[in-house]
Image (cartoon, rainbow, N blue to C red; front, side, top):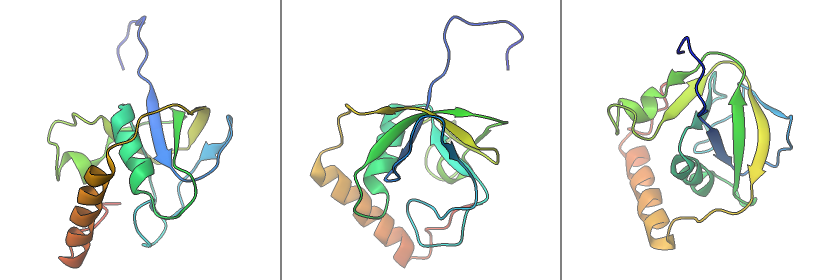
Length: 138
């Protein structure tokens, strides 16, 4: 954290299919949006709207896709599942924390990716799973 104040604040986003309200906390101990694995010991979020949109679009289930503006309540760390595996340097601004995220607001107007692009991404994730490479570093 810089020692001086900035007039620009970083916004953080969480994409999911969970129905949440401002003030709700997103906490550790739930399964990933993307797999049926064991509960996670981190909560995941991003500093770009695009990464959060992917999170919502790829989340399992049939509930509506949702994007939330969130506020970390504790220390945050680069998400090694994205930064180490696919995007060195963290250009997607993907993060995780062991502390809760507070829901600030829901973004209700956003543009999703084209259906064919979503299908390509889902096929890629299915390939990774079949090859045993769909492992979440938790």
